Length: 616
Image (cartoon, rainbow, N blue to C red; front, top):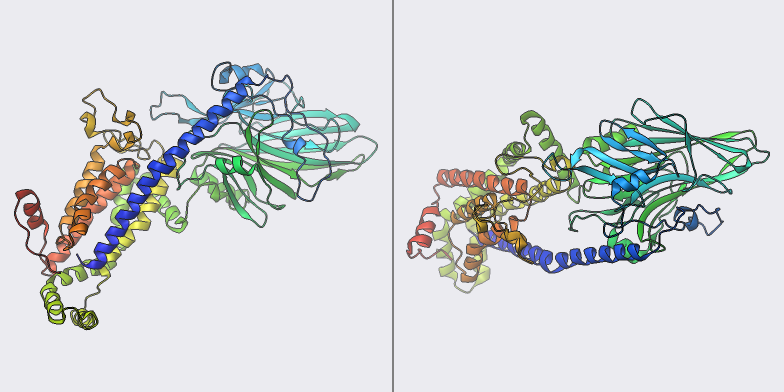
């Protein structure tokens, strides 16, 4: 292995080590701080006396340009329940609001609270909390009086009595909202304003809210429409640098805005410029809510409120709509609440003309690789019925695409080994005269058609593919709970076995060990990956530098423990890629007459033999 390859692998190893230490000493304490903040938040909620009234929509007041009347969209917050003592369970909180419109679709179940026409009860039929399908389905939205409040609503401000959080909407009969049967709500305000709200839902996760406002009074009125999505607690997912959770939106000239929950607690409020298109909301790893104002200019805002109960909120306030006496106006909004399924999100962007809605999914820096790779895996899964098999086949296809480049790289490495005696001769001839030695080396490379940095390309190619696949496995909901074979029931989760409890034979949970428990979950696939990485590295002569040799000796061990915490699908990919690389490198080296060092290295390592002195 030449110096360029050694330096590259050493750089990668050190980078991985830094990331691992960063995870242990920075991210893990940050996770604990997030949890402690949530515990303190819930403790605050428990000691506050519940108020009888919900949010009160105050009249709009004219403020500075870009301001959203805070009293309108935040108001005096309702006291939220906590997931602790004194908090009502979710079902009890839902039942407490007697006036509700049920929601039943192929993907959703829940209800709309007629107080405020609030979306505060929504569960996802097709997704379970655990891999076991007998586990409960995922609850996305919950009432403000129960644990983990999370809701969305649309209302108006501008006149006394405009429908806001406490407005009592009416519905005719025992209506049920389904894709085939929209529901109609009505509300009569003072000054002769009559509101007729039509709520429709599709087969997936998009609600359409269309308001007809008729002015039967004697004078013109000016109304502003607002919408908000509000949650009181943060997701349980540990924060990680490749995943965004928090406030998100695409509005105005700023375009994409991403603010973590921690940033919102620090900033308090972020107000982008006005917008005439786009969307804004709150995202988790797999789920999201988003409000989409239509056909209006509006002021977006992201906030963290500490009055009453602490909460995070994405909201908008539209420009005023003037309705003359005897006239009417139509206001339309969309509301997304559900799973961030790629094809559904992309279809909404195209069919509903929602600006860059695909950015709801965090594709990351390698977007141009990550998304095509996802579509390839998705198609292969549709053919073979298994995402794990799709990963194996995709790895082969990627190998074939880059085969010419990798072939040249390995061939150049093989020729480098063949001419090592000549290289040693040049070093001995010129001694300490590095300039003449380098010149002679370059002439030798040119004569033998050797590219000294060619061996770097197979590794460099793998790096973006590795991170793209990591992203696909970690953030796409299609990979959530996707099984492989045997004990791998979720490719997006680490291998659940561990050698430290003899793969489940001993009644001991290694993950329970403080701080380092995750690294003790050393399963079968990480071990396979470590073995294949070790074999691949032993195919090259040992580095002459003792320190580098020691690092290379222990690198497979370090990677084995580190990758044990990564999604199983990624470990399977790496192991399979190593296996294919071993075969490819061995065949090419044999064709070029280069000696394969594997057996000598293994014999010297395990047999106690003395290794031949490597070429310097």
